Length: 173
Image (cartoon, rainbow, N blue to C red; front, side):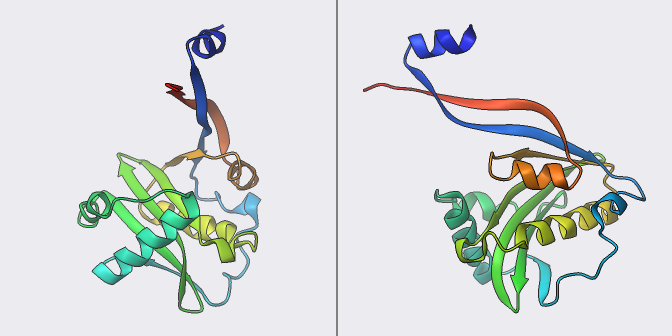
């Protein structure tokens, strides 16, 4: 009924995401088979320099198809409750993420992989590393908003669906 009313008044769904969470326990990685070796040549680093920040913004902007505002991200670098991360493969920056800790919950945001590296398992490798970082950071729960394309990955890693989030925009034409 609400959706019909929105459509009737020229509102359309711009995008939808699924809110998901994962409870972290000492054995959180066992069901995912995380006991294996990390991917050779794969490393995660915290973004700290202006050059790294430029690279992070370029990768995230490409991955998400919209421009990321540098001023907004610059303000996050020194926040103790945030980690701006970049994944590297053989010293090439390939993926981005932001972790935000509130109490014992850690929000995972802006997980994006450079287009030339998509579909090759790097998002899975990155998420496994992010999950380990969250556990080391004393997180008890990871929360995120999954796109339609990311949802199967998160489900396979043990994340539970909570609810659907729809963003609407009015058609003014």
